[in-house]
Image (cartoon, rainbow, N blue to C red; front, side):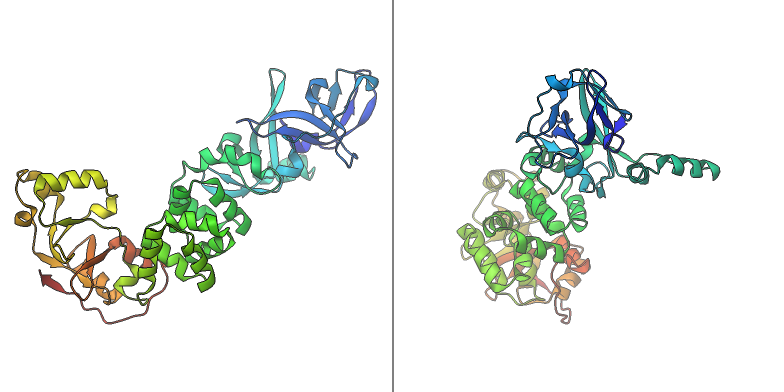
Length: 423
């Protein structure tokens, strides 16, 4: 194994032993899972036309590189469109350790020669890599031994690395996307805290709109707004459109009216309308934190029909906490449990098996009222009603927890008044 820092400034000899110059950098093709070294750049060539192809390299080690051709047989070439200079591109950049789920800085790169190729194996993100670049590694090891300690490399296998920033961006996204999509949205949100604005934007463009939406929804409020402000409005609209309406509303409410309006105008009409309705509710109320994505079943359905409708809707987990039963005017008249639906006879009307004693809140009730009701009645979610008892949304315990943890916008404080109403 050799390291990039050991090769920089190492001499280059031709087949006759004549010194041609020193290695200024290594040309690599980053499109492959283990990037391949494609040539050596001779230091001092400012316009990058003196790339010695890897096929002309007989051997390479910290002491220098030996070629298999004489000077007059060499035909240095320019850097190709698919190539990047490794030290210039990778060193001192931030990368995501997709195994340790953290952002680290690259101090060195480990290279392995095998079957005539040289490939990038790992990045060194530890102190040893930095000392090696400063030509202080041997001294540091001696000092460590005198103190009864040892220094070790802190290596991250290349397959566990996703890189950000620099001229390699258009190429590397194909490599990073698969790795990043395997990371849980909550972990991606934590990673976003350690990225700068441009890197957050790049992360959003790397992920699918759905994955980007899930990660952004888990991020801290200031990270959310800073990221969305930096995104092109079309991309921001696509990502926010993939969010539940309540999460989308939280982010949009922190933007300027101009920016928020521009994003909303680019969203699908039904999503945009849901967000506009939520934005009308005052902060600190149930209406401001509810989601408009919920299950409402007509009271005219039978058990079998209700099950068929649920299969067609394929609700998300948080939407299926409770099944709401409404009349033809959309007024909430009962709550139906999954258990009651499963054990009842197929032809039985759901109006006969629903519970009419329902705990609910008004759109104008305070967040504290919602929290008190959830706690008092040990519920996972609450239906939210308008002044005519029509079901307009639900608030889940996760929504309230996000407020407590500061992941939703701040709310005003009102007196808790949980209510239990028979419908």
